[in-house]
Length: 217
Image (cartoon, rainbow, N blue to C red; front, side, top):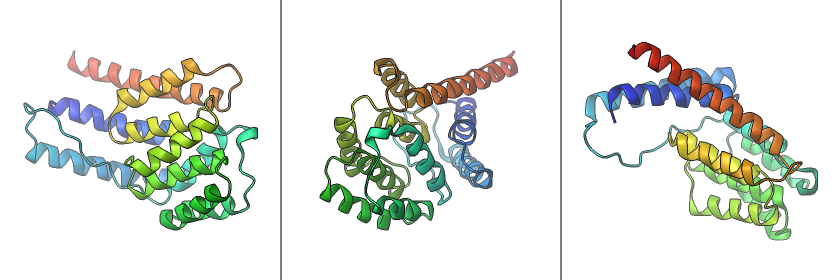
């Protein structure tokens, strides 16, 4: 990977997190600092001619819990809403960055009601957050359960794609969203929101690629 591409990739990651996922402005400086630190490390230690290897994603800041809880609510259909009053507490803990405690509550919810789609989806999210944005076997299992219970819902595919994008695997995440959108029937839970976010993401990508092309010429 060339240095120019590394810089472009960092810009894409920042644009995706800031404008597509609509993270709070107070987190932008932290995101930019993390990306800048990664670029600095790449510039001093990387070997562009070597094949790439998986790397760690930037640590998730507590404020991001607010955005992801709201995204989940937008993507879950009315028939998939959790009826457990404990979900409110689990969401409050996630918003404060208390992901382990939130996960413990959510595990209790799905233990009592294994068909609680929203609780499974929320559990997948907090387990991913607990691992600093990295997918784990436990979070993958939770997303699979949510997808099995509501195969037409956009939620699981959206958040799995989000995790990929956050790790810098932009094309993989984008394609996962596009494939899910294509497979979803009209009126499916979260379809319109997924379509909107995919369109926003594509617009950001196009603009950044155009800017990169203009600079090269």
